[in-house]
Amino acid sequence: MRFIRSLSFVVVGLALVVLAGFQSPALADNPPRQVPDAKLVGEARFEIFFFKIYDAQLFAPDGVYDPRGVYALRLNYLVDAKEDRIIKQTVKEMKRMKAASHAKIESWVPVMEKAFIDMDEGSFADFIRLADGTLTLAANGKEISRIEDKRLVRALMNIWLGKKVRDEEFRDKLIGRAG
Image (cartoon, one colour):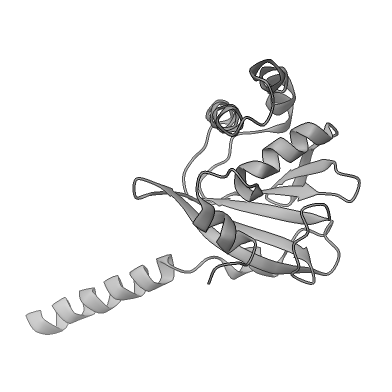
């Protein structure tokens, strides 16, 4: 009897581990509507010292990424992320990448304060780059803001998709270069 009970705990435990490894199919099956003929280009998990922060997915028309075209980056949050922390890390990355002068980057902070919100574990944010070079931000499928400054848009998206990214393997998986 003890063996059967132990075995059932093991089976349930393994089932939970397997289920925890899968992303919600609803997220991948519902790409942002602003991307015509959107298909998944690639996906990757962002971790810091074994702490899972978010899963990222890149969508583009017919699954073909063009940095100058329409695309959407979706971040599926695996932790609670506060707005001020998101902004602080964004500014830090932009400065590390030398996306602009420190003064210019600091001048973008008020725009980010209006555009970004707290993200709860289990929620998702979409960064949707439109054909005119502007960026629409959405949380859990609801539009929250729009960024018109094309230089800021480029600096933001380069954090994940640019040449000076912190994690090239992460970027390569997103843009479909790595398996």
